[in-house]
Length: 406
Image (cartoon, rainbow, N blue to C red):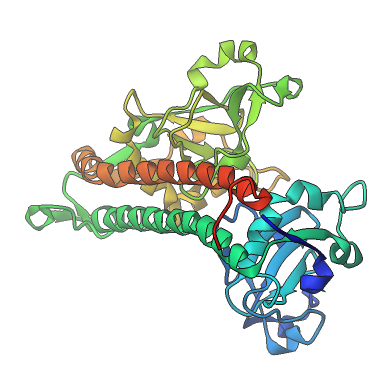
């Protein structure tokens, strides 16, 4: 594959960002999207339309710049290496060195994949011991090897086909989860479960409704206290609170310990369909489902595991949706010593939480929603396979080892 060497300054304009004063309420709460590297933490999509914060027109004029659609957004510090493409005009904070592409030379989607495939090289341009940063001047001087536009478009098309499938599966996962949550609210909040018309209401509750402790539904145990000096580069996977995802556990950045240090942690093994919960920190009460994973995964201390039996899927749906409710998360926060610097809650405290329900209806709900959660796990496994295939293709396409016909 023939390529031409350019500096990044030759293929586009490198633009930094800024943060208008957070003390001025006139700058914030508008409709202009503004992102920081935090908005790209764990972000899996190619394109981004907005983050958590929005600027007003007044805020836009006070220290940042509106970047056009198609800009390649690159986090240049804290940390270096998050990358996405703006799907609409967007602003960034000073943690970005974004590239407004000259589309006569560079395809933005190709540049996105090029950066993803050459992150180790690009990170070498960062300076600073504590928080390395790539300056605007350094970013402009980085050299890139670019093929012709038709070849760029072909490579980008091949790689983006994988990302489209991944994003479609991710949307389906969210829809399936929403279906389960909607059904939970219909049955256990509005009390419109199957056959509810024939059930007498007593004090606003269906007859037969009783107090149930969480412990009656599942035991909860904190993970094993692995020592900090045990952690190594490769070995047996250990899940920590940081690995809790929005629906499923993120298996991409586990910590590892030697197999010998897992002998006493056998009962803390995780299996597909297990439910975990954060017992401390800023995400206290957040839950995550364990997906299919090659090899063993152990729970670390302060990450709780619900013991759901040999087939976790039989009990997963109700507990998952129960602990997704805002009222349950608030309950956990209130029970924790949230006034301390590091709020935490014990498994015993959670096991003692009381809910109102009916075991037969809970069992019926679990059977009804079991296929939804089985599909969620299957789609996530597909995404893991697609991600591996894409990541294997990326360096081969970029290096020319796998030739494409333009």
